[in-house]
Amino acid sequence: GEDVNIVIKGPSSLSNRINISLKAIYNGKIYSSQTAKINIKYFQEVSVLNRPLSKGDLLKEENISLQYTDVTNSLGKIPYKITDFIGMKARKRLRIGSNINSFDFEQPTAVEKGSYNRIIVVNGDIVMRLGKARALKNGKVGEIIPFINPINKQETLHAKIIKTNLAV
Image 1 (tube, rainbow, N blue to C red):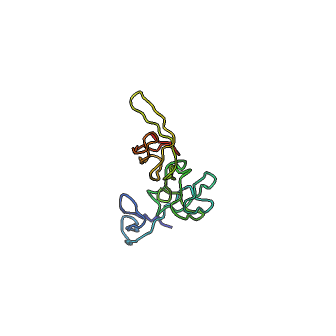
Image 2 (image 1 turned 135 degrees about the vertical axis):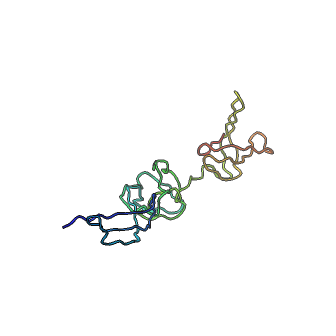
Image 3 (image 1 turned 90 degrees about the vertical axis):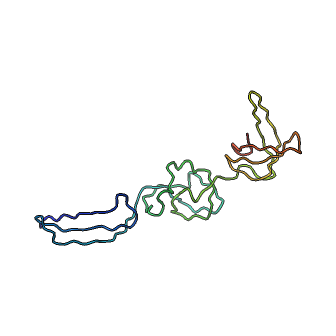
């Protein structure tokens, strides 16, 4: 029935495995002192898949559920804004209950090699819209890829993809 203090000394930032020092102290006297290795598991409410996704499937809002789960091995990979991942493509096959993280998803291809696309050319106050510019390689939003100039087929234009089939 006596009070026993347990003093835990460990690193300032926890990892998933730490050593702690335990001491049983009564009336200022140490009765027992021991070092123990403990495994720590981190749990938090995260977005998980509520249905499996195949490689290449697009993530939809209805594929996501919130679940209180072990994120020990996912630290640093869990997105802050899950809405940023809606519409992204699965890099590999993912099972039900998988945590949604940045390593499992990528931007889908917005421009396919050989497809005809619109390009907007801006030079100061002059804006020119070109249709039927053929892509010379696949590209994702934000990437700069080459296109065949529809006005002069001998010329290659490089443009940044801003959305599906549209580049600047």
